[in-house]
Amino acid sequence: MSMKVEKDLHMATGDGANSYAANSRLPKKALLKTKPVLQKAIEDLYCKSLSGRGTMVVADLGCSSGPNTLLVVEEVMSTLRDCAREETKAADDRRRAMQVQFFLNDLPGNDFNLVFRSLQQLQDYLGAEEEDEAVALPCYVAGLPGSFYMRLFPCQSVHLFHSSYSLMWRSKVPEELSNETYLNEANIYIGKTTPPAVVKLFQEQFLKDFRLFLTLRYKELVGGGRMVLTFLGRKTEEMLMHGEVGSMLELLAKALQSLVQKGLVEKEKLNSFNLPYYAPSVDEVKALIDKENLFGIEHIGLFESNWDPLDDSDSDVVLDCASSSRNVADKSIRAVMEPLIIEHFGEAILDELFMVFASMVAGYLEIRKAKYPVIVVSLKKAMH
Image (cartoon, rainbow, N blue to C red):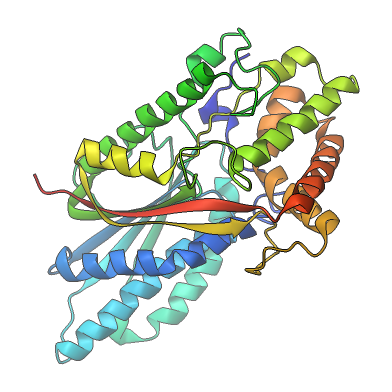
């Protein structure tokens, strides 16, 4: 049975112990790390593209649910208010009247109910800020279900697109891997035993998807519109470098292989499970953006983030591999992978799977601390 990405791909819902809302510290660290890039894009937009009165339209693509969803809105609004304060000082208290329309987008399976229930918290924050009348900036928030690999907005209607920890997910598993031919046996992504032809299939799916994403957003952005995109990637062209997401997913595949050997998972079930995923290298991203010639690159960079979401140290030493590995398994990866695992393998294997996975991560961390490479790119719509 082939995976239906629009239906099956979503983070663990609700706000319980295993939910994404309660286990999304890693994406939060990425949001805080990339804050200066987002602020610069907003400041440039405010000064150069938002002349006169009007409405600024912002969309967060792949917003998911939980505290990070609100954090993005708060950061955008905070930066806009800072811009308004500076403008008020410079213009003898004369300031343009502006309002913000904020769209929160994700696939239909996302827990939008949790997002909507938490909006009161956001309104309380924004309401407290509104007490400063000099920078009153009304903000209207709406949910927008749908794939960002399709058109979401009218032509030239959006000023700023933001997306964090989403663009490594593909629109679908490559078709050749979905027709029960088992070309990537015992792997769920790109592993050491993945044939070169299958690696190429994942790469081609990325190129097709990212090209489409750029084309769609170009049509939807106003002149001078901006995009700030953050996603897991690779430092070099080489696959499976220590710490990269491919290495982590190979450990998850080995944990599933272990369950096959124990008779808890059918071999055919594992062989037919491939993730709609590709973490590109910085060079692959830059080359495609340059080739399409739809956006100018204002900033492109890479930073590293520890696998353990609770480890904020810059050290290369893991003090407690067992504890760190449980954090990786239970406070990060499970919240992301659980819905896909349940859909394909059923719920019964979850606890055993992530216990075995944590043990394998512990062994991996004993070799050396693992850090994900994370790509951040700020783009400006080209004027043709």
